[in-house]
Image 1 (cartoon, rainbow, N blue to C red):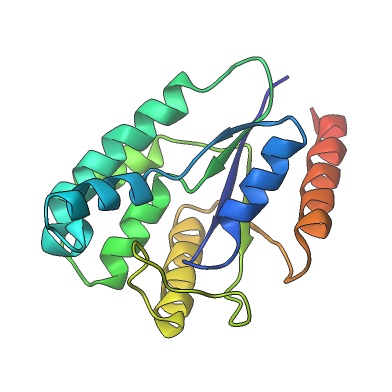
Image 2 (image 1 turned 180 degrees about the horizontal axis):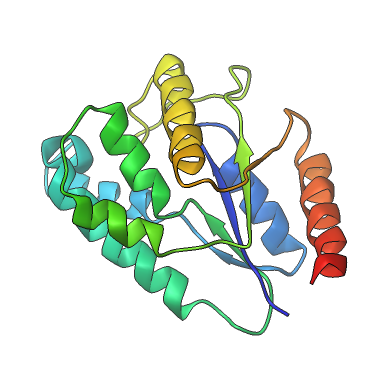
Length: 181
């Protein structure tokens, strides 16, 4: 049976490298969409598209992530670099008011496992698409955790360790849950 598995956390916690590691092991992975949207906006002269119009950006991102979720493979495990619920967490982080339609869309998406990576100062780096400070990353991590608590969804915290060790923990958890089916 295939599973949809989310890798999440604040910015700069190692999600993308972890997903690349899973992909190298032969797993299907759906990559983060935000960076592509941000870079498209920068080509049009908009430094941070999300900050310019958070609601429009969030609605567009929600539609893209929902499409990504719906069209992902049903033949194997699929790993997602970020998911729909983080959209709400980011709006909460910026204290942006949004309509419940956006939140309700996110409630309809259920991942089989959610792994969250905690803030990790030693690996945190800014780049052309990452505007947040490390302190912001901590706040965003807390907002993401709060969304899952509000939705009463189990999240599994991956400790600060090597990509290999994180992958091993993920695969062990996925394999152990086969017995629960």
